[in-house]
Image (cartoon, rainbow, N blue to C red; front, side):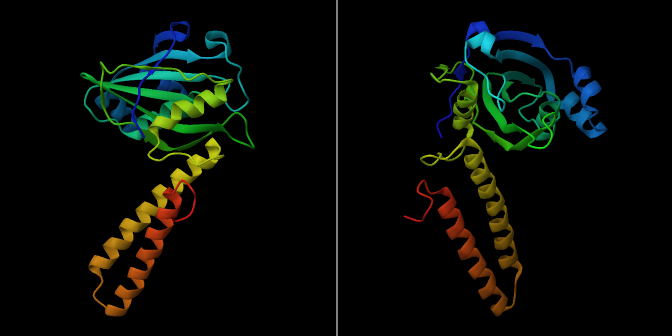
Length: 227
């Protein structure tokens, strides 16, 4: 997908620094995660609040608001543990913008309410754009009817593949997660093949590889089947 930066409306500006100690108080992160905050994060700004009262779009149960956080980095690296710690404590979907020197990238997990406990949220893995120049021209927010559709449109440029016709956001993210999982299986299978000495086992592993490659091809296809 083409990486873009969105131009959030001034009416949604929030612009409050989020102290790290506030995250520690509510999230109780491990010592290792606190160390990541100290070493990798300069500051966190709660930059925009996309809500019915700020951008005149109706909310839904799944997406009552969308928060935009800017994270200014000490280095060009940020472990996902830091993002997950913040996501677990803010009970709204979040789009993060990472800023380092003169570069910026967007990163987010798909976040939805837990079906059995509405006080908890379920997170997917994280998806991100490539690094862009901080001077990149920003794109206006898409014209949509509610915040749930807007959330899907904000996540779309972060995804490595396009959605299929009629594929909802949750189904699309589930497919992306399965692609990641199968890709990891494929790499493990290749590693096993390199180490295997027995011919018969090599034949079996090669058959596994072919099956995994075919499944990945199907998963990545917009039609859902191999062309």
